[in-house]
Length: 258
Image (tube, rainbow, N blue to C red):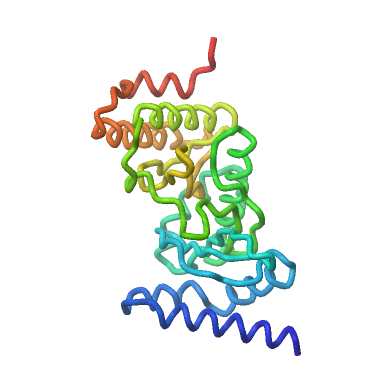
């Protein structure tokens, strides 16, 4: 009976989130996110003691939605739920197919989405180990990833693009350092790095959305890295930072220090 009551309470909370959605598109997205299988997955995280309540939506991304959740002591975490729609599947399949860690992944759409959650969890752990500031991963469950919440009780940390930086040159240097650590220590290229995928918290950039990050031996890794470099240089050039030349920065990221 206790378990049934807890599951019903979860369903009521999800219904409230749906009703608070302001537009028809937002409600449709909520319906895509919180299908029956996802509710069962959230319930599993609850019964395993990882979370107690869903607090509020944090963001809506290309593949999934992020929610602030709390454990039974009120500590906040981030729960990323990957949508299992065709649009999400079509976009991420190319990143899974080219990653040797996930050879043999095929078949149902859900199977690929579950592999994607696993992929982002593993990418985050590699980046943490390499010294890149990213949200620390906690656990993945089916199409969900639980990780460190970046922000405070007043709300999540802002995106880099929404912050007026006191010293944009220093932030640029830090991001370049993270790109180099990601490449040389974690063996990863972000593959979608821009001011939209970086938070700014406690005067430091925090790299997010690393599900699509690929191994450096991926067939498209150089193209992805060049795109990341161009995005970061474009943004900071607009802030009047004296950015490095593209090819010079490519070498700085990929070549070992002598």
